[in-house]
Length: 445
Image (cartoon, rainbow, N blue to C red; front, top):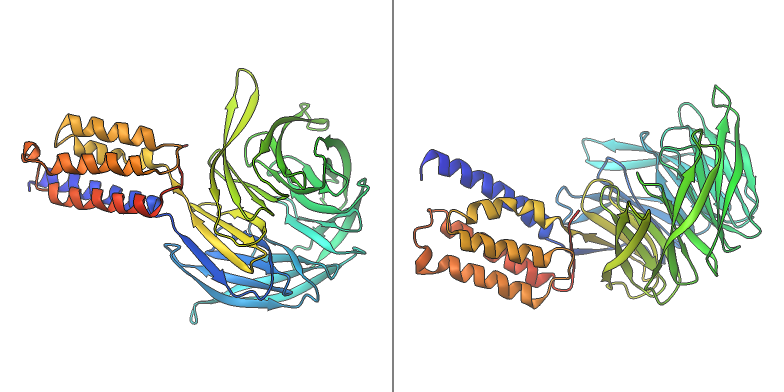
């Protein structure tokens, strides 16, 4: 093999290994909680997953670099009721947890380099709600924490400079029933709340110049669901809010504001119909046009989002249904950077799902190398690729890949470079991966 061919082959092999990692969708089940798992959340940068349960504990799971397994690093005990929500601070080593014991706890995180384990120390307990605290979230930039409660209110808490405590600076009154879910807008001074009164509300946040005094004014009430609103989530970049409900549906709301972002409106852009029971949790993917919904029907659905700029409309198409849980799915969360989804369930488990994603860009190297064998094989693979994108893996895809492998192995392609043997092995590995993941979806974005 000449030097140029060797370089091409090594580059091809590296790309293939990346493809294999992307295609290698698998399901890992985390079993440690002794009761229903109510909430899941990934750390923004560290290889950590936090899960909260009705067993009154929070578990920190350390993810292996290839996500093939996890270790239970620490079990956080301190709440006297079910843990309803967990969230990591965007930049500080801090975790917030909420509970039916009417409190929120702040946990300082540290990593023991010698023992290679994580530790968590409770540094503050926030009291103020008169009923169960259902949801908690940190602001991405401002020193703020928000909580929702069964006392029909949400509260804003200003974090201390060292994040060791928080002071309630505003109580949001407006819902006529319990507040189940809260979420900060990633960039705008906006907060969303979802409630048992069947509505979601948008609240405009304002502060003094020193960010010590804060106010929250309701600027919009979103009416459209016919039952409890159980979850709210802002899109990371698009002007969208997602809501899920006990009416078995989820909705996308298109947000608009004036130039000063003081006046806001929200119009229902799409209704996601497909679940057969309450939709308990909703989450946007950080970079892909993808939405996940969890439901009491024991499933999680992935929805592909598309935006018609000319018509200014949004659509959401269900592209796959994950059915491994044996009881209600209570929480869903995408990893901020890795192709990973976590789901928590009443079956007492957490499941990790690795996305089978973006084969189009990752397989570019395969196409480039197949053309060294023949242009017809390259065309065959392109057709295979096009037929695979945004569809569930079917037996027909495996048959097409088999045909490519057979042609590559035929005498008419005996003039292929010495990489032919390795190429056959790699394509055969891809076939095995497809076989393992029949019924799952490959999504291109």
